[in-house]
Every structure is written in structure tokens, then in C-alpha cells.
Image (cartoon, rainbow, N blue to C red; front, side, top):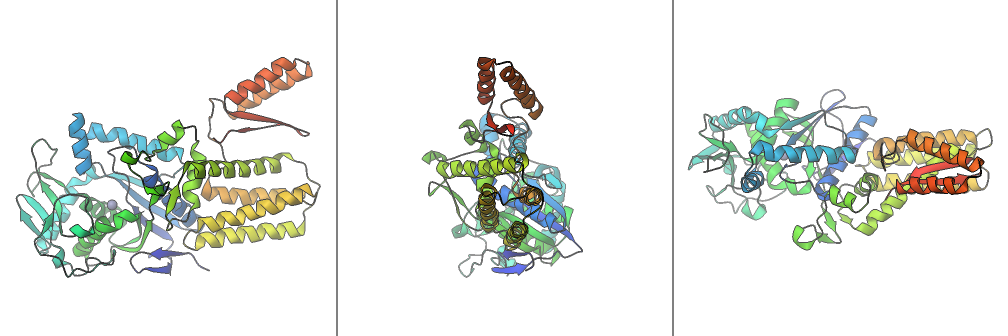
Length: 468
Ligand SMILES: [Zn+2]
């Protein structure tokens, strides 16, 4: 079966191929840098990372643009409250976002672009829309006239009979009940940052930035546009209205939306005390890999109910896989290969690939791997597992980890590098040989303090890093 995705636009699962050659032009809505991103945002970004990795594995070259929204209602309100310039206020959260993304091993898109660095292009686009009769002015602001775009609503599948022409909305975020003409350029307000332009002094609305930056770097028709499901309306609907009014061409061929994340079955909210950033979870002693694993493990179109219990279970799963890998690397197996296990490895790999081709069904992909792990652990205990099977299995795990990326421990945990841990184990071995057992125990305890667990086995000392 070919690679296929559910397209919000058609409401169908469709076979995916790019418009041109094997290059995928993809735009994803990035963070609004007014605060640390929360785990709901990170769920969407983790889905996009899995999407990137799978497209590349399937032989496509990526040209992925992600925007950084660094001018918007919330940002302006917060920066004014803090008495900071827009740039000072947003740069700290942009930096934090990049740190969080790196901790979660999210690949960097080919281009990260900031809204404030594209104001002239936005002004230009609004002028073009005005020239085509899609805009009107009111009190120095410029609005998009949605009645002029009969296809408005085609992404969010809404009907528009009740819309009153000329009713306007000025805020960047609003819901379907508020579907009205939206603002493209906001007139300057006292104390707010603004840009001088041929449209008058003001600032862009949120929606125009994505249309402009997407088409500047990727052309008039994108292969994939992705984001969180809450962006479908109004943000993505407005992006379509703006872009297609400008070009007369379809703006994006595939629209992929990640579902909501709830916490303990409730909508995440600061007021409910169930609001988590990556930093909050790491302060509670969790490492990033189980968090990545948990966020990736639920297929992106399913709602994800986040619980700390679920996160602890994810940590156990990651640890199980790491232990299994360690066993493969350190146990000695008889020469040769069991043909039935070789065949099983092939089945697991096919199951994994078919699941991800099926609209990134990560849960099925994980099931294929875990079933294989279970069967081969049994085979190892029964002495049926051979050296050749170990090599095949490590290749299977490497394939799994090229997408899930959770097996490799952080470069430095507990402040010790791999080489430093090995050196300490060497010291401990020497102490044991010299029958200095108290010293050996002390080294073991110190390593444990640094998050390093030692296991004495018949083949020697194994070690691993704690996952939570
Ligand atoms: Zn956007």
C-alpha cells in the first residue's frame, strides 16, 4: 500500500505524492513566542517531526518552512505588561522553544522564519488583495471581505448563510461563532508597536503572515500544510482565503491536523493546575525521551489524554527497549541465524512500515516492534536466538529509532559522558580486584547518584542511564 494521509480539506484518506519530483514543500505553523510552549503544542510539533522523518525515509527531499509568530495580540499585551520591547520579549521565548525542541529531538525545519522580518511582503500582499477587491478599510484598519471568497469555509466544512456582510472581528483568535470579516492590517494603537507603511501605520494580523511566508519560500501551491486542529478555524481557513484570492490557485494540496491533548481527561488550563510545559515535567524528574515517546505513541488524529501515570508507563517502555538493546549488544549468542527469527524480523519491519504509511499510525508501528521484542526475548531465554539474529534485530531497532528516536540516552545525564562512566567502572573493577569492596560500593553509589545504573552480569558490567 502506498503512503497516504487523511486530508482535512477532502475529509478523505488520500495517497500522497508531491506535485513536483520527489520534493515535498511543507509549511507548518510554528509557535507564538509569548510563553513557553506547552505539551499540547509539543504534541503537534512531535507529530510534525515524525511526519518529516517518515517522508524522508520514503525517499522524499524536504523543504519545510516553520514560522515563528513574534507579533500578535497576546505577545503585544504581555510585552507591554512587562515593559519590554517586542524583540526582547519574544527572543527569550524563541530561544526557549528551540531548546525544548532540541531536548525532544525535533529536527530543525529547513527554514525557520520570523513574522517581523516579513512585514514589507505582508504589506505588499494586502495591497494586492485590495487591488483585487477583497478588502475594505475601517478606522485605519484593513479587513478581508469573506463574502468576496465564495469558497470560504471549505477547510473547516462550515456553511455561511448566517454571515452578515460588513461585520468584523479585530482579534487574532476567535471561534466559529465569530466568523466574520477578519483583520489584515491593524491600525496603530497608543503604546503598541507599529510599522510605517503605505497602508498607514500599524501591524499585520496573524493570518496574513503564514500565507505570505509560505508562498514566499515554497511557491503558490504547497504539498502539505500542517498544524494543530485548533488552527483549522479561523487561522487556516483565513490562510486559504488570502492565498487563493491572491493566486487563483489551490494553496495547499494536503492539510494535516493533529488532535487535541487533554490532561487527566480535561482541557489543559493554568486555572485547573493541569498545565504542563516540558520544563515542568523535567523539574519533576522526567527525561525528554519518555515524553517524546508518549507524545508520538498516540496516532496524531486521535485525542491524546496525558497523565503522569501514562508518562511513567512510557518511561517503562523506553527502558524496556533500551534494556533489550543492551541485551542484544552484550549477550553472547551461538553462531548462525535462526531462519524463523529472521522471518519474524522481516514481518515486524513490514508491520512497522505499513503502519506508518497508513496515515502515520504510530500505535500500530509500536505494536509491531513490541510483539517482536516479546517473541525474541522468549527465544533468547530458550537458547534459540543466534548471533546473526542479533545483528538483524539491531538493524530493526535502528530503523525504529530513526523515527521514534528514544533509545539513545541524552549526551550528558548526571553530568557524566559515556567515557567518564566507563572510566569510573574501570576504577570500580580495579577496586574489586584489589578486594577493596567498600570503595567499589562507593563508586557504584556515586554513579547511581548521577543517574547511572550498573548491572553485574556473567559477561561483565553493563550500565545504563535512568530514564525517569
Ligand atoms: Zn499559521
